[in-house]
Image (cartoon, rainbow, N blue to C red; front, side, top):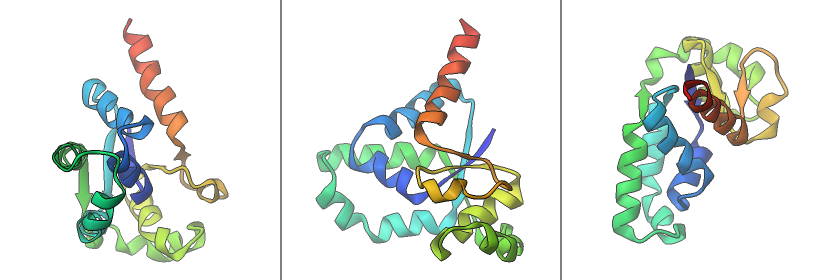
Length: 145
């Protein structure tokens, strides 16, 4: 299943190795979900790395390793590959900053992984929160057992 990762999920995994990080870890083993994100997310994270280092609960070396691990689990898609869905995405996205996630989801027929409740106030794009993604991944392990 193709899933668009929003910036807050990426940041959450970087700031602490909690639930969100465990999803990237589980998916690395299960290889069930294909994570994608707009290319701008990678640049946003890089541009704000100083703030992330300051706020993270992880030592710098571990933070760098987590960053590379998460980055390696996401395919970053250039804007030109999904910008044609911008007008439709503007009608779905709760905020202007979220338009690229919805555009990418529409272009790739993908779901979105976000804990922002407002993302679910539309019915065109499937949106999973963190707990739902964990359930989805764990069910694949149970099916295999």
